[in-house]
Each structure stands twice: as structure tokens, then as C-alpha cells.
Image (cartoon, rainbow, N blue to C red; front, side):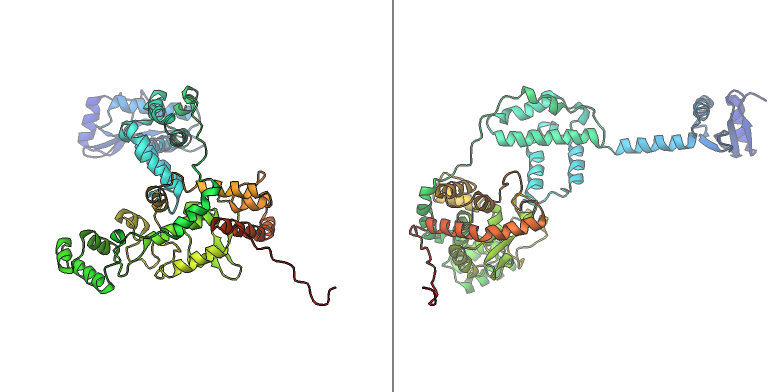
Length: 496
């Protein structure tokens, strides 16, 4: 058998005579000519009673030395009982997977959000946890790690310490959330794309100082609640802000002019309105003077009377009211605790009065406490427009801004739940289950539906009326009705 050389290979390829030429120095390796200057390398082998072949590349792209190296490598695989074709497929698949792996921290974050179902990022009204996660990544983690361009394998403990330490003592809760997120993100890098083997975030925890006590949410003492409720019920809106002096016909004309492309300055001159009033009407598209401040103060009242969280009150809808049972049914997905059945809120006399007042100004929208509009980016994200018949709920900061800036109370909205709890336990006549279920808290290690669906329904029915009595008594106290009327039992005439 004649030895193959580069010169001979060139001559064979130039001649173009079809055929196979074995290489005596590498058993199984063949130089295959199929036409003029058209040749390639193949490796033939015997495995499991079959004699397949595998291509090693075209000539002269793959030279003699490289072809022999590939042939010898495949011969070793065959000796170990491995099919070179399957081995090559596995190698190529791994290379493709490696190429598709996220390399930078920004790419890793994008992959993580996609797995969690937060791509595109959710709005806070749809998924508060997902919204907060995306916000922390964008505001804290990615900017600190070379704007997200840092390779995941290059992240070390020192960089994470520099990210966490500045806020660890000044903003404890935020620092914990950011630390937890970067830890979870790097755990994902270990477990799914397998970019790293050790999580540096977990190794630096012992080097973080003890945080100051976070304390409780700033709450108003329950003795001061009647005074606040009186202020809320007597609150007057600001004519400058809501422009009630502009009649309906003028509003319609302003909106029509703006749609024709008339500028704000010209609208102000033509209709004799302020610039703020013109912009407000054009942006909201409202043809009536909608008193947002009334919705805000009544929503604050509802938070106090119901002992619910702010979001649970803001997103209340008319369809959730069960008039027959005198309850408002909040879907469990909208509550902080996601496990269990829907939450039944017993309606008290004052709550019903608030609903009646809001019905008159809701303009047929879905939300009991309507807001005015949403920013364009929010509308795009939610797929809505400014004329959506469902309307929009109050903004997330509307209540706290009125409470703190306008009424000058240095408290938080969430603190009213603590105020209610302090008052209820101080009364010493309501069961712990009624109080904690009203707050939708975990009781004795179990969620407030107390186990199975059947047990949950039983306990909801059992404590519903006691919770109604509790919230009615709380409402009477809030409104200053300190003398509660206790109904006497009516004695039938036939009884002695």
C-alpha cells in the first residue's frame, strides 16, 4: 500500500478520478475523491457487527496531519466501545448549549426572569413580587456590577460586599431583599446554566454587621383614630387641583380642540382656563369634575375600618360585593397570603355608606375607589388605553401622600392594621381567631383557612359573624359612637 503524502493527495484531487485511497499509517482512514478538486476524508470502523463511516472534513481544508489525528482519536473511541458519530453529536450539542448560556450578569438576570415568568416585567398591580424583583435588579444589582456587563464567573465576594454594605445599616429591609435576590440569582447560575460551582454571596454573610432593629410600621395610637376619621370625613378638595369650576361643555370643547392639534397655550386663551386645568382635562379626557380626593380619603377610611392592606383596598371592585350575605369577597390571589380560599370581608354600616358615596362618582367603572389615569408606559404594559371602560384604581402612593403631606400625620398606611390589633386585643372580648382572621394572619402555625377546604369553609362561616361584630364595634369607635347599643332579647307573649 503506497504511503500518502501531500503531493500525492494534490495530484489525486487534481486528477478527479473517483475512488478511495487508504492511509497505511492510520488504519480506517481514507482519502475519498469524488470529482476534480473535490475530495474529503472519511473514517471507517467496525462496531457491534456493523461497518459505518464518519466524515472528517474536506480537503485541503483538513490536511493530512489533522485527518490522521482525528482518525486516531476516533479509533480510540471505537476501542472503548463508543460510536464516534454519537460522540461528535454530543460534543456539538454541548458546544451549542455552552454558546447559548448566559455569560454576563445581565444575561443571567434575563434568563432568570424568563424562568420565573417575569419577562416582560409585570406591573405592581399584577404581581408586586415580580415587579419589585425587576426593580431591584435594574436599580441596585446590575448598575453595581459593571452595568450588567460583568461575567458571572468573575463575580466575587468583595464586589457583593461593596453592593450590600452601604445600605445594610441605613436601609436594612431593602438591603436584605437585595442580598437575598443576588444570592438566589447566583444559586440559579450554579443549578441551571452551571456557570459557577460556588455562590460567593453565601460566603460573605458572616462579614455583614448585625442590622439595627427594623421595628414596627409607624402606627397611630388607637385613641387618636376618631380624630383622624373626623378629619377625613370633613376633608375638602382643592379647587385649584381638580378644577371643578370648568363646566362640562367647556371640557368637551377643550378635548375636541386638543384632538384637532390645538396647542395648550391657545386652548388657555380661547377658553379662559389655566394651563394646569387645560393639561389636566386633555390628559384625563374627563368631561366631568372627578373628585379624586374624595376617593382617596374614603379609601383611607376603608383601610382603617376594614384593617386590610392598602393594595387590597385600592383594587376592590363592585363585582366583589355580595349584597345578600353583606360581604365583600376578595380573591385570594390579591391578598398577601396566597394560600387558601377567597377572603370574606364582613361589611359594616360605615363601609356600606362609603360604597354608596363612591357609587355616585365611579362613572360606571369597575373599581370602587377609582383613580384618574396611568402613565403611558403603564398603559402600554397593561395593554389598556386612557378610555378603558373598566377605569383605573387609585395609585399606589395616593393615600400615603394625602395622609402624610396634606394631613401631616407621620404614620404609614400599614400601621393602621397594628392600630386595629391593639384596640381589638385591648377590648378583651373578641377571640384571637376573629382578630387574626380579620387581619388575614397565620394563626397557631396554620393559615387563616385552618387546614382543609372543608375545615376552612366551616371556620370562615363560624367566625364571619364574630368578625362582623368586631368590625362594627371598631367602626363605631372610629366614628366616635362610643356608646354601643346592645339589643335585648324579645320575649314572646306566651312566655311567663
